[in-house]
Amino acid sequence: MEIENKPNVNFVSCVKWVKKGIAKFNPDKVQLTKVELARMIQETRRNLRVSEKPEEGNEGQPSTNPSDEFGLQNYDNDEDEDEENPLGLNSLAEVPEADENYSDTDESEKEDDFIKPKDSLILVGHVEGDASILEVYVYNEEEESLYVHHDILLPSFPLCLEWLDKETGHPPGSYCAVGTMGPIIQVWDLDVVNCLEPAYKLGRKGSRKRGTTTVGHKDAVLDLSWNKNYDHILASGSADKTIHLWDLDVGEPATTLNAFSDKVQCLEWHRLEAQTLLAGSADQTVKIFDCRNPETNQSWQVDGEVERVCWNPLQPFSFFASTSVGKVQYFDCRKGQIWSIEAHEKEVTGLTISAQCPGLLITASADGSLKVWDMNEESEPVMAVNKEFDLGVVHCVELCPDLPFVIAAGGDNKSKNFLVYDLRNVDPVRHRFESRNLIQLVPEESVMDTDTLEQTTN
Image (cartoon, rainbow, N blue to C red; front, side):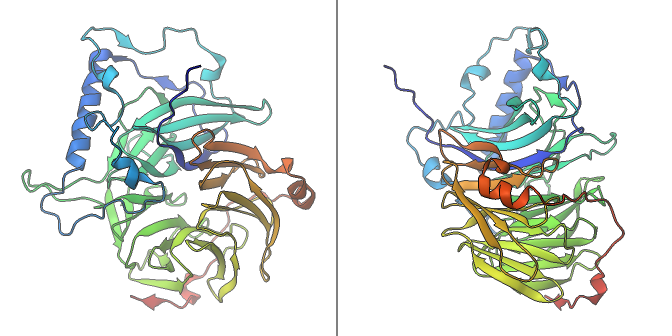
């Protein structure tokens, strides 16, 4: 009996839901000749070789492997790694120079090619062997279907994903911004199948030889957050200790925040206050910025490095932070910390709060567990369930914006590293939460008077 050789690395690093009704019903398909495909692969290889060299003319050196939570330090040293073929595409690069289309459009159209109005998309950052991939899943609850609609080859390990609808000069569409181990943010058009190049990029490496300066980050991009109120603004946090606020209309940072002394690992815009940004760092602080006055901020000390932050969508003054020592801490930005719990034995790598079901809080951890909590404003949350899904180290978890009890999660179990699950299948969750009145969030006027918040100047 043949034994299947599994890749030494196979994990899901990040997930992101896309709301129903946004994706194009029949995505466009790019038709490439094999010559064009080979050219693009060789160009990607050249870019990878350039990215591995130190930047010329830049002050300081980027950190090596800024966050090795995915175990890539040892992976990079594996003897079996093919340095000349970092993407595992050698066979594709050696295709004959024949002018034939490299496309699957010759096959009969399948029903699965169409994205229906009731389909949700899940964007998944997947690393398998030498390949880094952005997978676009389709999930339909009514049909109980889940499948990969298409995937996109990435030049480096994906660390974070963010959906947005913005590309300058185009009507609103469906795009995914990807932060990787490199400093350049790539933005991919999700309505195009078989694309090998991003719709646009944010950032540029400097070169003394070419006389160009660095634009954007100098190290890995660890988190991204799109401002839905000011749709031309994308925030990015990096291992270079900075936050950039990108003006998507010009493709350059409009503002740079330098308030942290270590890696900026997570950030999120406020749902209602367009100028208010929450961010957490490996320097063990959480900060809130009023980006109209970026030199000032509110700051709180937490226990351990900040792994995740998120606003409470039902309480506009409140937010959560999870840490590297297993803590989840809850703050009211007017009062300070409300409570702190030891949620997990290891770092809390996933943190998501329902915008529809009051009190439904979910955490995930490197200890392999996923926990559901029932929380309120004044006292510590009550754990409703502690469950392991055999995902290995859980790297990420996110609730579906359309289906209040459905989650997507990713881990490092080579045999099972991605999961979509309806939490109502767990009896304690169903009994505790299913009868609650769900809330439908609607846009409101600003509710947070940031002028009343005491600010600290760095």
